[in-house]
Amino acid sequence: MPVQRTLSIIKPDAVAKNVIGDIIRRFEENGLSVAAMRMTLLTPAEAGRFYAVHAERPFYGDLCSFMSSGPVLAMVLEGKNAVKLNRELMGATNPKEAEAGTIRADHADSIDANAVHGSDSAENAATEISFFFAGLDIQS
Image (cartoon, rainbow, N blue to C red; front, top):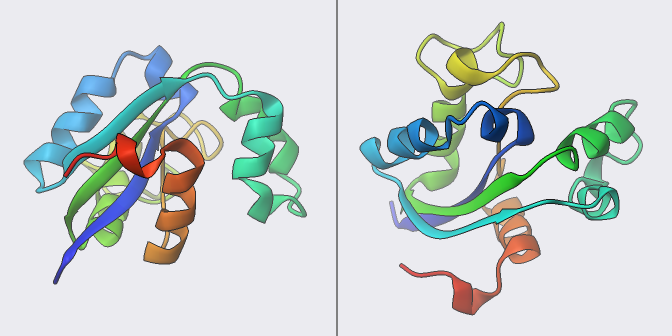
């Protein structure tokens, strides 16, 4: 399988808990490399644009408020089968359903404050990466 890129975001709840290092360690120990990294504070409008795919869903407003409630760490992760591997390491969206040892099982508080975001496909990864990073910002 060729090397792939995916977007990972450490969300405001996990940044506030000071578990950034543990989350990055898990990625690196499982074959993913950080190709770009950026800490930022999203405005509600930016969060709205990023999560526009969910605009019709009932949780959209709360999601945008949460994602703009504190700093996030956006990363481009690179490795073999990066999209799938990242999602496995994150665990189920609902931390109560996440397998033991996954990021969400260990660091998430709820389905809303679930510590991390990861692209769900290679196509969405490309779109999401371009939201946070210009091509020149990414280093293989």
